[in-house]
Image 1 (tube, one colour):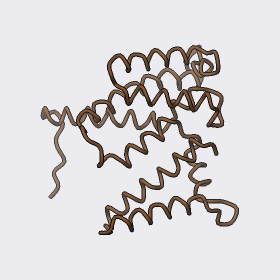
Image 2: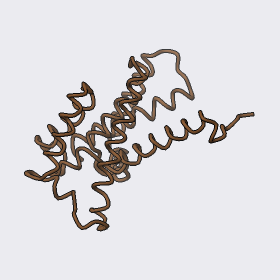
Image 3: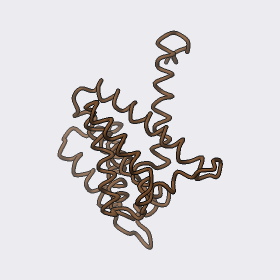
Length: 203
């Protein structure tokens, strides 16, 4: 496991425990923080030949910098301000991820003649394309989105992951599925608001 994936697993476990503690609320914040920290530590402690972190890694494989950032955002969401702007930026990020995924995965699976994954190695075209995306975000003053991809580029240059391909620091299959989920949910919300999709009523 690499540093990026280790961080992702730690924040994933923290988020899962935070969700569990919503079901079984504990009144004292200090106790919640202690339990969360203890759960993260125990995740990496081997019990027999494997640790829980190794089992999670087997299920998730390598996590991208984007995935780690989304896990951190999920953990901090209730403390963030300007949530309307944040939601709009999240949809924009999801749109970019969908485009990236549609560029990458068909070629990797052999459904397209050109394999864009090969452009992610040093000297490849994807680095220049990502610089263009970051520059566009900077012009639009979308600093968080620009910073996210800058961090992915830094992690790639410092070889913080096992891969030498920039794509693996920007995108993974979990982020790609998250992005589709964001837009499907948003589309259903808009259709429901217009009365085109019936709302689910709870009795």
